[in-house]
Length: 351
Ligand SMILES: NC(=O)c1ccc[n+]([C@@H]2O[C@H](COP(=O)([O-])OP(=O)(O)OC[C@H]3O[C@@H](n4cnc5c(N)ncnc54)[C@H](O)[C@@H]3O)[C@@H](O)[C@H]2O)c1
Image (cartoon, rainbow, N blue to C red; front, side):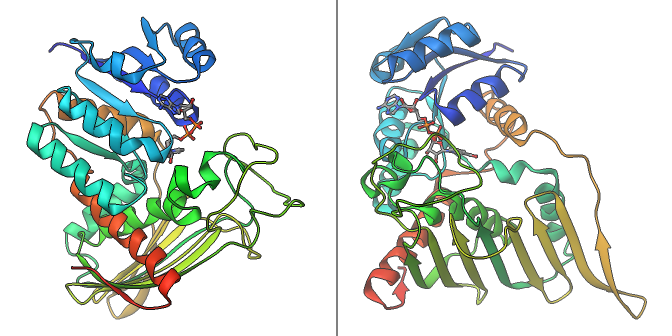
């Protein structure tokens, strides 16, 4: 089978992760990179031997032999890049979050449907060994009816690239919620079978990011001294779904709480599960008249490589996309609902 030729838009932190992953996937070839920062583009060409680099991504889209595009730019560019890519006949892998709001996400889904191109959402955590294992158990009925989940995605001090695009509403669409809340929201919804959200109550806060004396233990990307911070660094929410199930969420880039792994508790009428981002998986059940806790062990793997291999197989027609644009839109509707509920102080209903 002919190899899938990839054009990558945005060779920043996650863009480079995907180039390295794709270079490990059989049948994939990164043939072009576009980045407005010419030094970043040139460095990618040099380090990864990329044949063609551009500063204007629209030139990359004109390459007839590019089959698919990876969108790895700041959130504000996702909508335009996805729509222009599908209109140029390319399949698309779009990094999370899908867009800066649900109205944009809706247009992206419509454009991909109209052009019959794959719009794959980069929800990499569905490819962890423990999430895939738990999904199988749920599908086999081990938890029964899942009626509630408790999602916690917290960092004690972990604002990314503070002062840069991540912390500006106009560029990112929001803060902790849209950046990391999105990961565990998607994962939990997927495990729950993607029920449709019907109402949302939420609150978002901004307490740390604007501080001149902000101290931190880790940071994704580099800080931009003097840059802007006008987004949330903590959010909490309660979501109701059309099947009667509910979900609570807490999410922080920064909060005065202990550093904890990202966790999702799923409560079913036959069993419960504790999924932990740092490779934990426990099932709470009953066995022969006893209360039983089952701890699962497995090897950790590189979820980006598995995610990219799956996307390539989808482009080749060998697999069906696991993470769809439609699901990305549902996640985005919940995020929008949390922000709106926080602003208005009221529950938001989703039609
Ligand atoms: N799945 C994950 O685990 C994960 C992790 C980190 C980031 N992300 C997502 O990936 C995206 C990028 O994040 P990042 O951390 O790599 O950001 P980054 O700032 O490190 O990289 C973004 C790159 O895009 C380039 N760029 C900006 N505007 C452009 C344009 N108009 N055309 C072409 N290039 C442009 C920048 O020059 C930069 O090199 C975001 O949507 C983010 O939420 C996903």
